[in-house]
Image 1 (cartoon, rainbow over the protein chains, first blue to last red):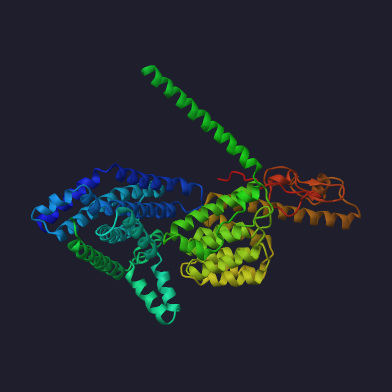
Image 2 (tube, rainbow over the protein chains, first blue to last red):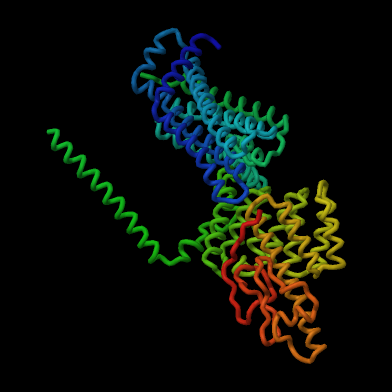
Length: 258
Length: 309
């Protein structure tokens, strides 16, 4: 990574970890993981399942909220505070600014996920008393959640590069919801005819497919993960992220900042 | 200045405490005047597909939530000694549609659905439907076949179907060896006490949940009582055939039948003999699952569980 991108990423990370809201969200996620222990006790025979399902869902949802709410302000806040002009007056290219911001936010989310994962594993250990080999599959689910965050980060940055924070949040969150229905959208496309079929198929492939990255339920049931799925999900997330970042760079390069 | 601030703090704190107490009290009153059905029997979304879509891919978590809701619903209705469980089957259908691999929902769900009220919902057909769906999605789990066969055996007394299901289950890899024995037993001695004892003993030994083990232990106690009553009643009949009258007391029956002593139930209470020649248990409420030895017109109370180590 070039030094300028690294500095921008480091500053973005530093700025993000100073935000109190971030700690509140992590706190909530940890609280939910702990609450899973109680939920398991008022149900029958699902203590382990509920800890994994609730814990990983909390990590995923709170991570998405953090990614969107920090991501949408990354560019607009710099413009609002006029700090962007100071940065760009130095020998920093606009694309380096975007890419640096992305890595800073991605780093923040990886660190957050690490702490939230400790909470999940702690709650699980409390319930099962001893880890077993299939529990390592939780790491695969966490890895996919991080891939999901990378996609969301890039989308938040893409919208942030041309829109207001509020609209960016609406766009990013809507895409998250639509992306969760990507499989249904593909099913709908399969049933449609003519132009509708083409439009629906196009939309189904254009929106991010978050359902492929969600293996929480399978992991909770200790179903083995195919190495091909891990490889292809990784490549898919990387390509999608690159696509969204490229879009963000293209827009930001042409944006009139005066 | 400082006094004014202190006064504000005190007033705000008192106001907070009073408002909180008032709102809690009011809510308790509101709960009392609200129709119960609106609280318990409301299933806001009853389409499993709809709930699955609304879960945004987090269907495993939703299944856990719906399963917990099912357990709470059943527990609450059971505690109230209710005779209707209108939302039980839809709740179980949603739970298993959200997560078809959630085995407890099938295993416990069938035992909630199948028994007659107040022990369960009295819907053995829906229990069978649920178990078949479970087997379809988890064909390698022999316990699901065992639970399904159990419903056929205990609730429908369809021993042929029970035998078929146990036989299907015995072919599943790693199935417990008793599945083969149960299949054979169904063909030959389905209605025997020994078969019933074998089934409930198997449940007691293989169940991990303490509630299920307790339930199995209560059924084993009930089988012993039913068997005792059946044998004693046969002795009363034999006595009548031999002497032309009914025994005047249990002691006379014991002497005539050369029994070792006054027969007692699993709690150590002596069985009673009525002047009409009927053998009864002393405290039927202590044996919630017995079918024999009950006083005429007896209405069972909610099941009581005893501690079994």
